[in-house]
Amino acid sequence: MTRTKSKSSGIARRNPSLSSSEVKELLMAQRAEKKLKRKLAGEGRVEGTVPVSAGGDGKKVNESEVRLPEVCEAERKRRKKQKNKKSKKVSISNGQQLESPDSRDDEEEGQENHYGLQRGSHSYGIQPLGNLFLSTSGRNVRDVGLGTLQVLNDETIIDILSNLDGRDLARLALVSKAFYVFAHQDSLWRNLVLDNYKGELGFQGCWKTTYLASLVPKYAGPPHLPLKVKDFYSDYLFQSWLCASLEIKPDWLSTDNIEKRENLSVEEFIRDFEEPNKPVLLRGAMDSWPALKKWNREYLLKHAGDIDFAAGPIHLKLSDYYKYADVVEEERPLYIFDSKFAEKSPQLAADYEVPVYFREDLFSILGIERPDYRWLIAGPARSGSSFHIDPNSTSAWNAVVRGAKKWVMYPPEVVPPGVFPSPDGADVATSVSITEWFMNFYGETKKRAEKPVECICRAGEVVFVPRGWWHVVINLEESIAITQNFVSRSNILNVLEFLSRPNSQHLVSGTKDRVNLHEKFRTRYEALYPGSIEAIKQKTEEREASLRAQKTSIWDNAADVMTGGFKFGF
Image 1 (cartoon, rainbow, N blue to C red):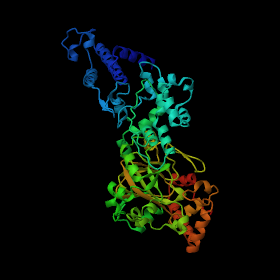
Image 2: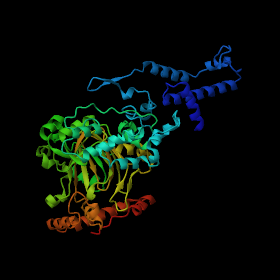
Image 3: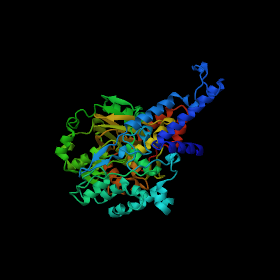
């Protein structure tokens, strides 16, 4: 490692115009050249002479003239880049011309090809920590600019800065180059905007400019033009930008192993998928929906443009959401996930109906006391839901009206890689963003014995999500969907067992009365369907006994012991 750094530094000193990626490429080419020279010498060549057997004419040549094709190609590309490099200009409000950040000569050139990025190098020049070993200066501006605070990790520093207001962040940015980078992290300004949100977003392309516009509604100052800081290395800060810039890799989309069915009867669906708790992608189940034909941007803005929909910590108008979605470039985009959309917009509610397979919804007997169960979902590419299990042990269906979604699902007994649930199931720790999980953990799904169920669900298709299944969903493009959770006779026993757990008040969601939900639901159900629970219990036990009898391998029987047999204790 030390030798590599020393030689690369020498090349950089002799060629100050080279970027770090070009230095590294040239160094590797020179090594390959020397290796070939040693090989040629071993074949009997007199030093400085190309042997006839190697295709030369025996004439004495200078050793530097023996060059590998890849060395020449690397040199040709470098010279062409230097020759064609022109300074790009961007205009700001007063007509002044400034150099575009993308045209500045910096050490991040080549990152785009290495990572497969949708946009160029980091706006503030942040590089991964490993690049420090190729740095010509050998120093990290982060440490120099933070002074005694350099002992703190970057996540802690961001947590501390999150307690500052906008004025203090702006002042801090003037202290040093390091604090300039830290104080301009978009997540800090995003939190300031959302914490002080007053009903209108007015997203300006970056959160700092959006914050200024929120303070001065008619703000007409120049857009924020980041300054690139040289020699700033941080894995933590680089990771967030990388996740927002990384292309969706073809490998992430290559597996599509979910069972797909069309023209399925309700009885077949219950027998083949709902009772065995198995996911399926259904086609043709929403062909009668007016939403499939009507729900374009113009229609939605006409009928719901001024309606506030829930999007993370805020409610924003659909018109503001579209303005945001058109320009957003961040790791975790805001994502409309609204459980009251039907009450807010009866027109949107009238444009869809529950597919025939899911119309038995026993929670409906609770009326207005039932937990939240249906949502309008809308988000730009990269938005979605990280790994989770649907609430209250319910099953769900998810119908895509516009766009496309990538699904990865694991059965209840298999915890996905990179996911760490608490022992009681109340909390789940996983990657900060969905892209980060795919980048760091998706590859592990290929190595495990337990393979996930995967698919891409497109407009007009419905995914059935059985109760208890882990799933992550990422939008591959701007998407709109409807999803509902439901309780049927196939999963009512599981729901009752879940609601009766001692820590149910920490597990139940979507309702204010978490403590009494089990008693209310069971009492009303038994009043409407006397003896039904016992009959369902008996049928379920018979079915499970039949399945156990069919298992012949030691592993199948061991799996029951490992995952635990279902017990009715409610």
